[in-house]
Image 1 (cartoon, chains in turn blue, cyan):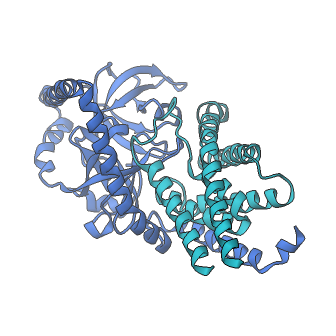
Image 2 (cartoon, chains in turn brown, blue):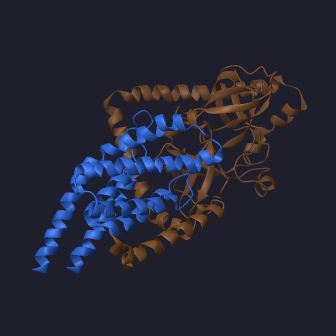
Image 3 (spheres, one colour):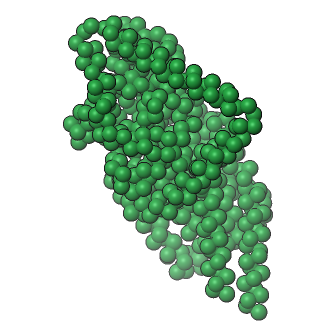
Length: 288
Length: 174
């Protein structure tokens, strides 16, 4: 074996290992912007993944049609639409119910939403492991996407862009333990923090922490973005409350289920611009 | 001779790309109790066992860089560790182990387990999330065992491919 360690092959491998180590340190300090090798690899892999994703989606749909799935799917879609409408109505109802200044400001969400600039993308791959909840979309910096841009589906918020390459971007979902979102319980008006949890991630849920002790939060309440910090536009639906508990500091916490089934997302929209973003984006990157 | 060798590396590279796309494409491989297999590890181990430590190290970098473009880890993390795994698998077969399916299974299980533990350490423990027992039972072991299953088909595929190219190279040499 000593012969190998003295050979030119070992020296070449050692140099490559050092280069990779340097690359890792560079990536760790670059704040989510892709290094040149990341861009090159992504440039090669993205078109193949895009094609593969289309084939996979087509195959899934094809087999679904054999099992009378289409009827259930249509019914499910219709129910989902009804649910979305009811959820929106519930949020509107809560807004009207609260007459304080905080909610007067909150009623302006619909006007603000017209300011959203969206880039539509298809999901081309999912992170293979279980440590992170992330997926890749087929739109990148060439389409105007930046690190920290929020990502939504028609149902609500699904994540935030964590790495940007020229033609693709990695989206870290709201389930990931690294994600924290300033949130608001629409029914009570309480501000809190929606935070990913490594144990809840596999169950497709996340935590709602720092809920005031006196909060009247109940199961089924809708959680929306508070807009505090300016990373996410306010009023985006995040999740519904599933269960409530008391933590060791005697403040409340809740387990919440996202509005969107994150494991089955096929397409999404990246919010590249919204009212109030510019003020915050320069000062923070990550959660709000 | 040179053409055959060049063609061989093209085939291997295409194989790694294909398997990675298969691994990343949503709904391609059904998860078992939320565990998903890490297909590139058994493929890398088998390639290294049949093509040597240098090829193992090179394909380790390639597989790692592809992985690194996908998710939450620091870019280069997987490339560095897969380089080391590819190198070690080749050297172990050359100096300590026999090239058998049992060796491939041992290497795959050990290296997958090690990578998962390292991932837990660097991306959970260092960030203050010290749930090792939960991670061991719900992530590390299920992922390692599910990955292990794929070693068998990869071992025989790579053995057949490597054998065919070696025969061709020998014929050209004569």
